[in-house]
Amino acid sequence: MYIEIICTGDEVLTGKIVNTNFAYMSQKLEDVGLTVKWETTVGDDREDLLSAFLRAGERADAVIVNGGLGPTVDDLSQEVAAQAVGVGLVLHEEWLERMRSFFTRRGRTMSENNVKQAMLPEGAEFVDNPVGTACGFAMTIGKARFYFTPGVPRELRRMLENEILPRLLAMSGTPTVIRLKRFHSYGLGESHVDSLLHGVEALAPDGSVKLGFRAHYPQLETKLTVRGADEADIKAKLAPVEAEIHRRIGNYIMAEDNDTLEGVVLDHLRQSQGSLAVIETFTGGQIAARVAPLPGAEAVFRRGIVARHFDEITTALGMLAAPSCDADTPTAEFAEQVAQAARVQTGATHALAVMVAIEDGEDRIDLGGTVCIAVATAEGVASRRSRLAGGRDWVRLGATEMGLDSLRRYLQGLPIREPNDFEKVDKP
Image (cartoon, rainbow, N blue to C red; front, side):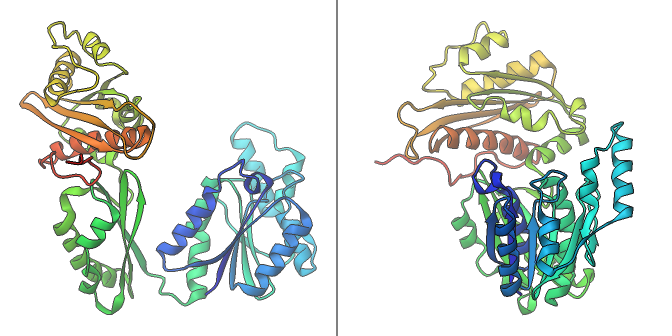
């Protein structure tokens, strides 16, 4: 089945807004075995929109149109869709009432121009949007079935997953029972994992399991798309493949499916009634920022200390007798002292220290930085020292991830010093 995505809006066309919606839609379609054949971006121009709709209607089987369902004069999707098939617009009374209730619940008065969002092409199929005021709809233009969605990412994502994907799968004749299993890892590159997992798909019968990857440094997402007759069939096919993936790369798997690394850390601490203090340099507080806002973190997160220089850390922790630390050569021993002092000062059960020194010079991929990490508890302290390759942003992202992953490993009773594909190896 040929699928086209049309993204509308002058802001998208001119690059003022990064088109993350297309990336999301294309990835979601790929996850369920549907491939996008064409992508078209068109501005807020009637003739250009009409041309794009008619061309897509000739070559595609299904088209997702994103954007242009708002209340303003440059939101043209309903009008141009109606023009493409020669029909008028009709008021969707039920949606109009839902919009009015939407505004009333928020203590606001609906503007008259919002009525425009309840005007749909005559004969169009209503497609629900449970989290916004833009009314989705579907209709046939040429030989293709068009699905019109709002540009607001939160609204698009809910509609795509709940409404549009099931319709597309039914159109394609693909079994509607599809499971996407995801493994999130850090420390192994995509080609390395691909090599380690060679042949795992063969553990499931009839090509029913497809292996794929999505690299977004510092994490790697390993994906299994599983097709089956029903949920029981899916589980039976998935079980041996999943077990083998855990056997081959298990320690590097930080989280699965919709879980996150910081969520896994928080869950472990909550289950053990633990608490956490974080001390970090150079990462700009990104470790604390990933943990502290999570639901339930108020019972766990004690304190975050962020500084650019090591002496500021020792001063904040009252480490009067601490040895000086050269900014260019942090040590694992120094990180251990910082973590232990932070645990004592805050009363936390666990303290994570991430000390980073970036190398001087141009911000190029062949530079790097030294990262010293320590996790301290009342029972002792574990640490590691690593040199990460890459420029400043690469080191900052890698240090943040390595710090959180080291804490995750400590909480799960795993070694925190396993090899890392992103470590810098100096030439002899």
